[in-house]
Image 1 (cartoon, rainbow, N blue to C red):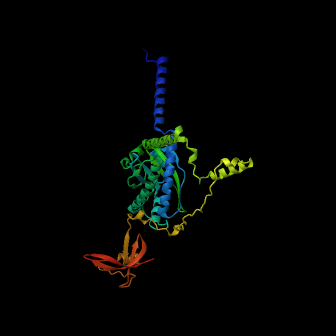
Image 2 (image 1 turned 180 degrees about the vertical axis):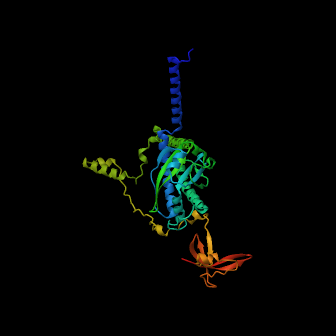
Image 3 (image 1 turned 60 degrees about the vertical axis):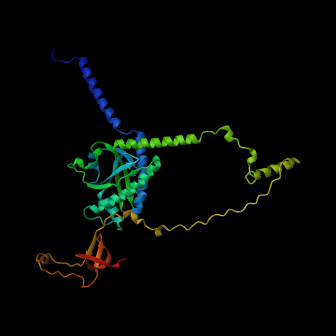
Length: 382
């Protein structure tokens, strides 16, 4: 042997490399969704997010529009390169009806606007860092939204579907992120469903919903199973009945039925041919009273409908009691020392201000409860 390969050996090596490449491509394609599976995921997401938009609209008292979804594939690097950073990840786990989880991604600014609207603001109070208050509020909003979305999925799949309370987290998506802090399925390729979301004139943005492939396929299988059961029920209902069930005696027609006018017409026709009407029984007169309907109740004005305040009862708010204010120069502040007296803009005995999330809501007076200070509310500011 001179170390040279024969032509047969070269061809064998090339064919082996080709088969390995084709096998790798086949395995990669098998991990993706079929067209039918993509369509089912898109349809389910479209219906569920449409219901969620209605719920969000009631929470923020603004018109909310979520457009038709676009289903594609992505990796963590795709998210880091193309989506705004930092953003908020909302983890949603299904505890009944479906087995798996998915993630909603929203921009930090969108979360601040939504939470400010939920607190009764106008959506402009978005300065400062994202706090635990924002994350708690958006978790509650997503709990209501995805809860209503689960109800829509339950009706579609004809089975109970329920979720655990969502968990919101601020993620920067930089290159040095700890991979243990993210969901396991985000470490590989996953299904990405993108929506356009509009909230009044305040938000015109994009939200993402991420699925693992196994969960997306399970959605499709459940969807197909529900359709097949509906088809089988329709076929069983449309089966022809036995002949003895279909035949009905002619004499069972009541005298007050709609066939009376037809009998009168036949009687008139028979009179034209002379005397044949003697063969027909006389038609009885039928007394018909006018139909009476119950009066409709006046529709309730949507403006006067009571708001469902229970939706945000668990959202924590920061209460601040302000004794007074003053302004000092930097020089005066640097001269502060123990014992320095600072004069405030409030007079002695004047009510103090009570603020909730920085908004003036009430006046009160200081009281002592055992060893702690307290506030007795004396006036609510309208």
